[in-house]
Length: 257
Image 1 (cartoon, helix red, strand yellow):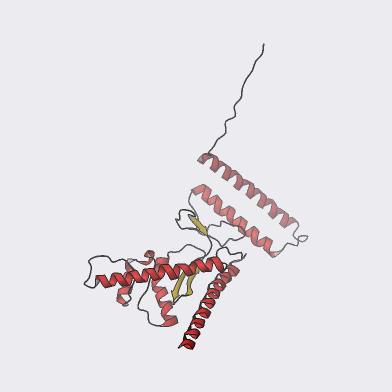
Image 2 (cartoon, helix red, strand yellow):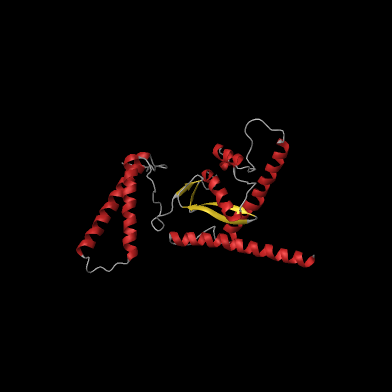
């Protein structure tokens, strides 16, 4: 008698929530055991060990990661200042909502531009609402160059509070009008269109240039302070090149006249 049997192994194409949760709890348990063993070794052989300062910094970060991930696993809710990288614990995920890259990592910078020259008004590795910084940006611009009459900004800055402040300060903006049109609406539309055009061509172009040609697209610094320094050097090196070009054009114009 010949008996033949075919066995088929079933493979899950997609892990369920319970599978993921079980694996997460298992990994956290293993990490907790490893950290406990490391601490035991440190206590028993403290005099014989000669470990660098960076080791203690990294172990401290890993213990904080364990604490954060354990809380997330138990509650299902994210924690503030969640660490997403051991080597760069200061980096935070920033949700941008872009189609290709919905989440980005790195410094978020609020910048102002005057006559093609960029200035960093605020820099943070945490996500922040740049729409709340328009008034501070205007005051920063005034501290540098004095009176300001026109501004051009993204639509996220067009909040009710920012509109009210701009009107009270007699500043013309490129924000879309709310409510009824005024008598000079056509002139306002022309000014708004020119301001928006200036922002699109000059401002966005300058940001792209700094990322592409001045090292801001992929910063290779390994510490928070070095990364901030890298950003400032990239922005102001680009400014120096623009100023040099302006001076060269002015010199040629003076010689021609």
